[in-house]
Amino acid sequence: MCGIVGYTGPQSAITPLIEGLRRLEYRGYDSAGIALGTPNKLFVEKRAGKLGNLEAALNATLPLTHSGIGHTRWATHGGPTDRNAHPHLDNEGKLAVIHNGIIENYTQLKAELIGRGHKFESETDTESVAHLLSDLRRSHGGDLSAAMREAVKSLRGSFTLLAIHADAPEVIVGVRRNSPLVVGLGKGENFLASDVAAFIDYTKRAVELGQDEVVTIRPDGIEITDLDGNAVKPKEYAITWDASAAQKGGYQHFMLKEIFEQPKAVADTLLGRLGKNNEILLDELHLTKEEVRSLKKIIVLACGTAYHAGMIAKYAIENWAKVAVEVEVASEFRYRDSVIDKDTLVIAISQSGETMDTLMALRHAKVEGAKILAVCNTNSSTIPRESDAVLYTHAGPEIAVASTKAFLTQVVAVYLIGLYLAQTRGVMDSDEVREIFDSMNELPAKIEQILETVEPLRELTRSFAKENSVLFLGRNVGFPVALEGALKLKELAYMHAEGFAGGELKHGPIALIEEGSLVIAVLPFGHEYGLDEKMLSNVQEVKARGAKVIVIAEEGAEVTGAAHTIRIPSAPALLQPILATVPLQVFAYEMAVARGNDVDQPRNLAKSVTVE
Ligand code: F6R
Image (cartoon, rainbow, N blue to C red; front, top):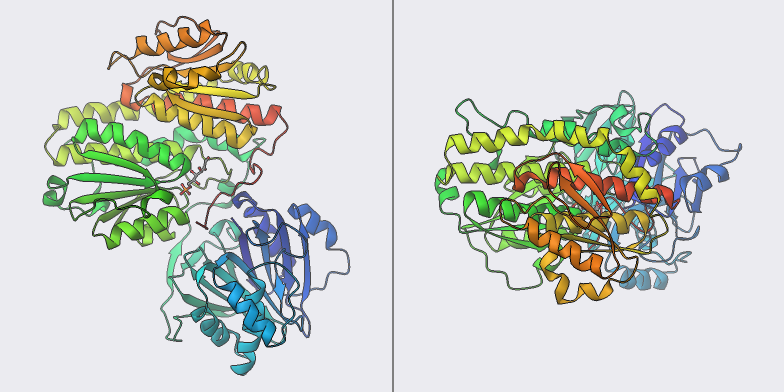
């Protein structure tokens, strides 16, 4: 969701601000704006729509300044208009604020501020913060950091806020609560941003901010305090990926690049995980042998694509480690009476590590006494920080809004957890673990093989560009793959798409089938469970009612009733999602291209969903 950047230093601020916003475009937004640190009165420009609209509005009279803040907004309170775009100003036009998140008590705040004579220009919750800060800054003798500390004490909700004032334009003040903000440390210049991608061209040194910490940046240094003004020691870390990782590298879209990065991402996530005695090495789980052995239940919490990775975790962990696994959509979890105790392990899966629904669910589980393990792709993000342990996936930066390589690495991570639990609980011996691990090690080459032969699939996909609806069917681990295929297609092609368990077809969904309906059946999960034949019966059932069926099947598997068969390499059934998902990603990608949609930033979606 909203992207935030701040810059102070020797450069003309507009360059790092616009570049930073461009790097944050993937988060999803519908308007953009900047405030430049001009003395006396800030220079502000903001526009609804894409960043290009803002750039077009920034004409040649742009002042040369060395500080500023920039924002891409994903509308919550008030539509995506020029007026509601950030920054928002105080009535003197001297103080500007940008914001990600929601100020829950803004109505009351706004009423109080209007009572004190403030005039509001927009429908946003954010504007109330600009007016509040303006008053508080005055009462703190012009100290913007002190004003921010006091303001935040009276705010409810989740937010990242940045503020700048024309009387000291080289100073930018930021704060975060349940929403991301990182500091970039440069030479004689400093940055603030929603994530490191915004300033990666300028520095590899970053500082993470804790909850309710206020940061003040100037060209020559930064200060961090808590809300009472006590100094907090900056926690610096090095950014390990370089700018090229956040660029398209010759691909037409980030999504395509990320699909093609999957062999490496899977290999990187597996790297160094098998010890010399064939044991799975996951020291970062911080679980004692006794804790693992006394585990009674695992609850997986996640949203969207990450939830589908959680569903696959259930099949793998229950099969290998013989521990009961519940999987729940994170947004539902804390609003019911779940049964949790100290023998429950909660696994929170999140690419971004900032998803508010997942964060709130894990906090709830923590209060109830569960141990929390995060599976995350983003270093030092909020979910790992608030968990007892974290297993990082090594997908690298995922820029396209629709998740691809992050999903595959999440699935690999939960396989590793399953094998680790199985070996520690004594359910599998080291030879069995080794055998599965060896099969996992073959997956990168097999994904590569699929990617080398996607052209016919792309061509086939284009022939379906005018379809209105696609149904996806799968059984066993093919069921979450079907759900993931449908989600990708909805997101990217804006088409009606549903995934069903093959067995459920006759309990309702088959009524949707009519002459010409398009169905994709995910076949290759049955052979170890005798389900292949049942899936093929499903294929026949929909075909008999006029459907065209595309079947995803392993090489060599017998397929009947399919109009088209997409072959993928064979693998043990539980590992097949890693392979079978790839053609479905390509199908959704190509469909979006064929329909002229914005592939990397599909409408209405945000990469990092930081509101509940
Ligand atoms: C789908 C997609 C979303 C995310 C979901 C959770 O392509 O990207 O469904 O999977 O919003 O996001 P994270 O993993 O960042 O918690």
